Image 1: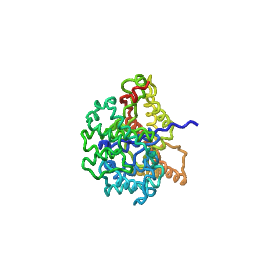
Image 2 (image 1 turned 90 degrees about the vertical axis):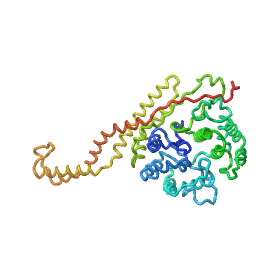
Image 3 (image 1 turned 180 degrees about the vertical axis):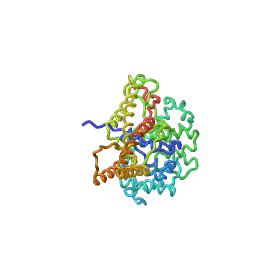
Image 4 (image 1 turned 30 degrees about the vertical axis):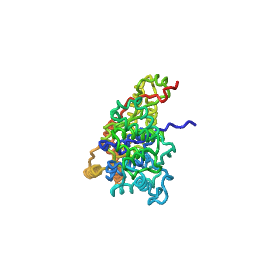
Amino acid sequence: MRNRFHNQIVLTHWNAGVFRASALPQLLPELAIYSLLYDEVLIREEDLLTNRAILRLLSEDNNLSIFSEFLISGLVKLLRLPLENYPAGRRFDPVRLPISARVEEHQLRRSYKGNPWRPTKWEWRIFQQLDQVISNYPSASRYHVPFSPFNSFAAQLAEILENRESYHLRSHPVFGYLNDNTADQFISFCRDPDAWQRFMHDQGIKSLITGPDAGFYRSAAYQCSKFLPSTRAIRRLVESVYAATYCERESSDGRYGGSELVELPYRYSSDTERAIAAEEALRIEVAPTEAAAIIKLQPGIAGVLAQTRQSAEFEAIRQGIKALGTDDDSPLLDEDRFREAWRNLCIVYAENSATSLEPATHVEHRIVQYAIYVYILARVLGFFILPTSKNLELTVAEDAAAIAAMEKLGPGMLRGVRALVKIPALREQMEKSVAVRCSTVTLTVVNSEAT
């Protein structure tokens, strides 16, 4: 049986090292958008725990409630550290208190931008609330793919730095200031696992944050970057390589646009293969726009999204994403098909949202009460506002039934009318919150001697 196409995305831009505070207003709406574009929306556990700006957003009860809904429904999942990575004898059990255990692990053996990391009291309160969500709802998380014994991060970083001229790093707006001495030093750190520790000792630093296996990974790169020129440029490259290798291991897309994370250059196995393509390739991706910030979320949104994902329109959008960029003769046709599929899905979402997230208000109940009073007065005074048959004589039982029907159906009828008014606005909001973005990616030959 043929495997069903499955797409997923890691929200790499949640990484505190590249996250922009200006993205906070659209952070939670983006989760709703991505859940309508991907089968799984994935957040790295460490990115959530160490991003103080995001945690402050979640410190508000309503925001944490909405975020918990996304997790409980399985629309969004935390990528967790496998249980075998936790040493014995710790304070927190990773099974019963998974978030607290991960916080303890990060505090003891990992870092935040190369520095020791310690959570505050108010952050601990959020972690404890998330403990309950993750431990009680298996759908809220899954373990990330185990790390390979081979350090793919160091290998990828060294390969780019060794071939930085081919990758056109000097012309890049972020990497253009990368110092040659910094690049050469980092190459040695990547190729010799002990080189970075010797370098730090030479700088007079005796207490290192080495991580579980003391290899040259992101934490080590941040520590070394403090003592070398062009610190910002090398850190941005480190973050981009780390995100790329992580997403590759998870077989997922990554979130690059709108932050300082950069899609790594494409590589070809030969000059012949590269000659078939242009100097730069066109990368097509679907990404939220700033308009996402106007999408208002309220309790029950996860149910609306889950209902929308059951529609044929959701299957059409998945296939539309899969097809983007596959038609070399007419890439714009692929984009048009995607936009049409997205528009149709937005209609389904708007209908579900308008009818499901509109509880009866106090005003609506008062309107129904007034309708009942008018009906009773009409019966007492002997006339009806609504046209009726002259021969109609309602019994007491029928009167009671009519009043009960007003009480029961009145708010629903009012909500239905209001939903019809709201659907176009909801559809337009969601439709404008997504754009197809095209960007160029440098093509590089891996082995120029290959034929």
